[in-house]
Length: 80
Image (cartoon, rainbow, N blue to C red; front, side, top):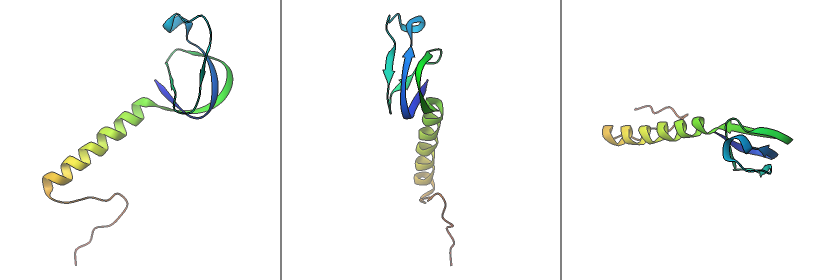
């Protein structure tokens, strides 16, 4: 699946869901893999990427609690 980030689409999902009419997709809506874009333009991101990033963030939180440290992405943690 993909998530619409910016734009608007008219998607034909009839082969996947049986809906006879195309469905409008806006920002934040999911697009089914295999749906056909009939009209419009949009930017989308794979929902797998989003799930992976959430899982990775959860792992970092658990790992930091286990080690008793808080890691801040993008900052150097130097001890003096």
